[in-house]
Image (cartoon, rainbow, N blue to C red; front, side):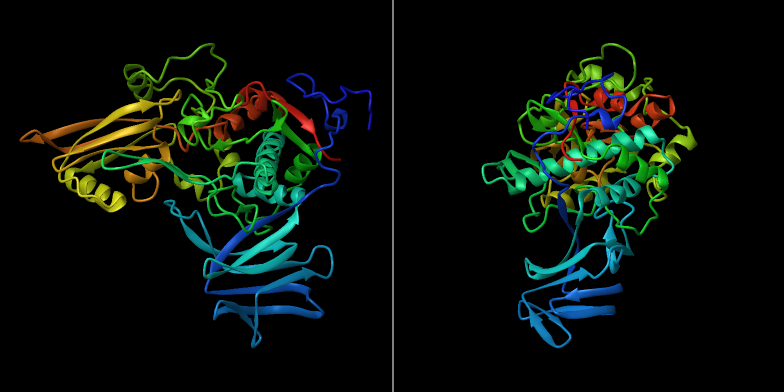
Amino acid sequence: MNTDTKKNSILTAGDLPAAASLPATALYEHEPTVTVGIVSGEQISFVLNQPYRVGEQEAAGQHTVQLSAGSILWQGRRYDELVFRPKAAGASFSLQDVTIGVNFHWERRETQTFLGTLHLIVLQGRICAVNELPVESYLASVISSEMSATSSVELLKAHAVISRSWLLAQMKRRHDPAGAPAVASAMTENEEQRIRWYDREDHTAFDVCADDHCQRYQGITKETSRHVSEAVEATRGQILMACGDICDARFSKCCGGVSEEFQYCWEDEPKSYLQAVRDDATPGMPDLTVEENADRWIRSNAPAFCNTTDRHVLEQVLNDYDQETADFYRWRVSYTQQQLAGLIRRKLGLDFGSIVDLVPLERGRSGRLSKLKIVGTERSLVIGKELEIRRALSESHLYSSAFVVDTADFIRGIPQKFDIIGAGWGHGVGLCQIGAAVMGAKGYRYDEILLHYYKGAGIRKIYG
């Protein structure tokens, strides 16, 4: 390593010609390992594709474990936990009936294959399968799982850095006794309001889960391309940092033209590097916290990196099941009065009677609603934040909370039709994957992509 190159500095755009020029810090002496919760159930079936060790035994082939009296029943004996360690590098195991896309419109089950150690534990009355493996191996899978391996190399590099940053930030917070735990919190819940945010409240026995709730991780189920491996290796150990700490580098599919700020989706603690950013090269942007501006913006088709129908770009960043979502920059969902009233009653567990109105009360900088008032003939309730709103107005998840509502066909002052017109796909915080894909296709370097979405952050190498 060239120790004369920008010692102990955080790099900004233009400072990053190659990974080899980055300095190391003392955050990690070696590459860390990560524990990933894959699947849980009262019974788990799996195949050890090569020999594994369980204590002093050797095991291979098909196996099934069952929950029995609070323990794990395997081969006629009960265990508090079971650890299957590979005998040789490259050994893998396959878990059957793994659910992906939990609670999303494309939810499904499949068999998935993983490298590394299989750890079976009892957690909340179920057997949980946990995969332990090196961080860089995990990242190669995450990038292949999150997007197509045919994406541009610069996009893959950018995603390697943010996936690594987000992961290490969560690991640091989980293992740091002084760190604040990441939990789901009900900020306010009473007869008038239900304001909640959702984060990693259930991950106390492992670092992250394998689904979109954290980062989509599917092991080696999908082949990792040479480009993905090169992108991970080229950025090995690189993370985003700001204010002396690892960035909690959030990302979503499509920001809808403007990215959102952290506090409108999660805790009321703004993060300096998660600002609202206009997703193109146009300077300035409208104040979308103002209702009139948000209404005009959402109904428009404003230019943005993520405003694209280029199938070549979309096929790079969206896997097969993600491509089932055809409209994402601007979209529309329609409900009858009966459909909407029934949906809200089921999702919130409250009877509002007929729905009279959906009133926007607070929007973030991207136009996403963080507070919405549901007005019914029987009762009214203010809900938030963005994910609570999306869950209340869809059988799975509304694409985003950046929307306006048109009502029609009134009978005695009560609308019989609701059209929800929306922008973007996901919470919109941090990097916009489709926008970043377009930037990569336009020739932007990965550091330029990163520092477009994470203002004020820098890139640092923390292990070699």
